[in-house]
Length: 161
Image (cartoon, rainbow, N blue to C red; front, side, top):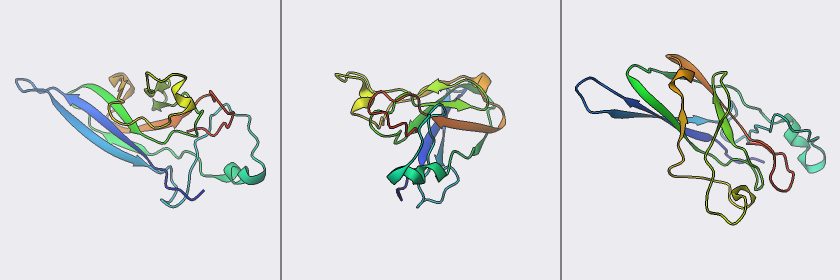
């Protein structure tokens, strides 16, 4: 598994300035989880009971999520959202979500209008997939974002995010 698998997120902050129009400030961050670009990384379902054997034994020693702080200036912010461009796990992986600092998990949007659970056949969601981030979860200065995946909806791979 020598695939590039960075995670790009876009943080949008709406700023209000008195007597001025609202403005949006965008911040793009690419995560490689501490691995060089040529090394694959993994963020497993934290509840997985999978034991990696055989051809997948290498998964047991793959780099795991290394928190990468993002420094933010929240002066004048009225709301925030996160848009993730991500691979998200093998087909059948569901429950992709993120958390800010030590707050609760926030679901990433999934596809709609598919004949079955979308994770069974579709994995990447690009475009307008923003998830609101409560401003109270962000702090001025360093913020840590974590990403994970939940239970498998098909195939029982337990690969994670």
